[in-house]
Amino acid sequence: MGKYQIGEFEEVVLLTVAILHGEAYGVSIRKEIEVKLERKVSIGALQSCLDRLSKKGYLTSADGEVTSVRGGRPKRYFQITIAGKKALEATKEMRNRLWNEIPQIVLDLKSVSL
Image 1: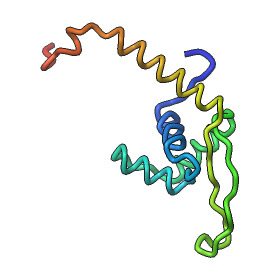
Image 2 (image 1 turned 135 degrees about the horizontal axis):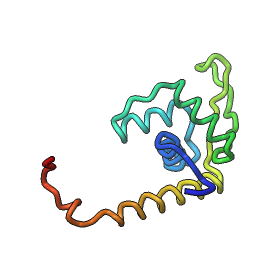
Image 3 (image 1 turned 30 degrees about the vertical axis):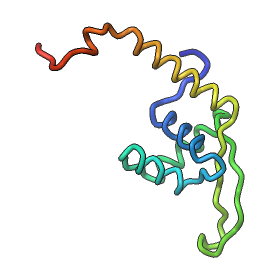
Image 4 (image 1 turned 45 degrees about the vertical axis):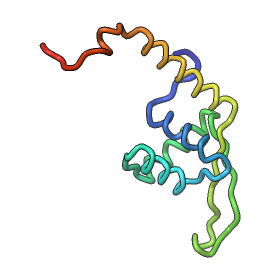
């Protein structure tokens, strides 16, 4: 896969940040993944992934305004970087190459017999 290696959950998080463009913060990212993919996401796993993607240079973040609702803590907004976009494109290209290599007979299978 080369230079851009991301795991499946990292890919989901990057795609979600891109979808939420400008509105991507922890809670909104978590909700989007849970609704769109019907997949439970722990906030701890999400925060670890966001930190990892930021360290790889695939995301940047900035603090929003301080609100009393959050006990005076600002929301941390995330945005995909050019490197993050390239990582997604490389992952999509790799997946498409693999899908294109599957023989049609396998895709036409109705059941598997061993």
